[in-house]
Amino acid sequence: METRNADLCVLGGGPGGYVAAIRAAKLGLKTIVVEKEHLGGTCLNWGCIPTKALFHVAEKLEELKKSDIFGISISGYSFNFNKAMERKDSVVAAQRQGLGFHFRKNSIELVKGTGRLTSTNTVEVDLDGSAGQSGKAVIEAKNIILATGATAGSVPPFILDGSGIIDNIGVLSLTEVPESLLVVGGGVIGCEFANIFKTFGSEVTIVEILPRILSTEDAAVSKVITKVFEKKGIRVLTDTTAEEVIKDGGRYLCRIKGGQEITADKILVSVGRKPISSGIGLDAAGVKTDAKGFIIADEHLRTNVPNIYAVGDVIGGLQLAHVASDEGKIAAENIAGKNKLMDYRVIPWAVFTSPEIGTVGLNEEQATAKGYNICSGTFPFTNSGKAFITGETEGFIKIVTDRETGEILGAQTVGPRCSDLVHEVAVAMKGEMVVDNLAETVHSHPTLSEAVMEAAEDCFGLATHLSR
Image 1 (cartoon, helix red, strand yellow):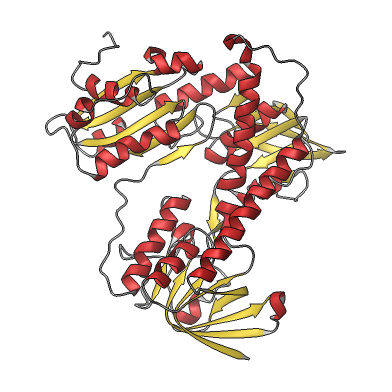
Image 2 (cartoon, rainbow, N blue to C red):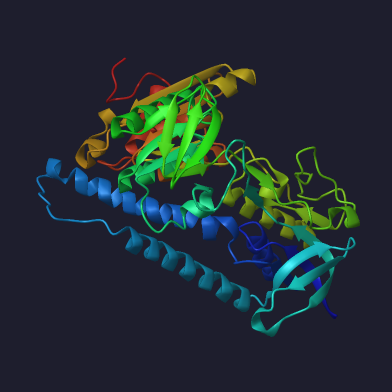
């Protein structure tokens, strides 16, 4: 059995693991990454990148459908789903190649196989046979980062079968657009795919157990998306649970609360993810988890074992690729001898529906619950000249502040390019600017970003293009 030595062994090559490895290597640590599938993890291979590649196609289709309002008449165009899926795959493949290049340039060794802890300093790997590697390998490492991620789970009565009842991996492997799609769970994943496949031509129904879809977003944001979805013809059923699902030939019959029946060709289950923490040797190293199986890590991303760190979805919290990456950087820098703390106060995130959602910090309800005396400013895109130019006037920018100090507590945005616009507020928050600074920053005209300035001005009742 071959033994290898390293300053750091990273278990998992997703956005937490590979970023940690690159940062560690740049800081002079000899680094080995153990990955059983593809570099990039869920984000690159079955999540963020392929989903947004399809979202981009859906955006182009929506632009074609409304081209008449711009005086452009287009007839005879067609949509080739298989070609769109091939392009999605080529985007993923190119990104994988890019990661391989960065590993080689930074002298990071990639060991392909399934790894598990056998002690506080040892990882044993069942090699997958690629690149002439077979059997087992042992990695002796001074430090270890656990970045094994999370996976989708089945929720009764929906048991994943890989063909008709599918998760995010299954829906990204479809060979044709389903005539009808039932989405179980109205969270981020469910709403993004509902939007995409409705644009592609599927009849889409969302079933959500909670009172509204996108329940982690501001209620006003959720209301906008619900209104837009229903206008598009997406059926949204909230406060609803499924009681039974029956396979009927090549389709599925779902009975929901109240006796209503829904028939669908495919069922997408998107009701949360569970950590990949079993089978990786946590007991052998004495690493602790919580009751749900998430690895417990402190602000330094250190577990209860001093030389073992954990990052990304396997530790719970905000299960976002960019959060995992930042956690990976913090863990690597601490291993390299620095003293860095993970700061979760300014974490922006986006939901790629149409219109897009961008969020950072606290909403009004959360800020009030924390004891702030809040003042909010809101600016609708119906009052934006650039939004009128592009024909995208749904949504708004809302900025939440502390009334006494002007501190920016958060922002909730929904509308055109809000996945980008929210970062203007995030940078202001990270730089500890007050809302006055945003309001007084001259913005180019006509731009969508002017809506951020006017929302900041509205905190003082001074927005030029808004009448109260």
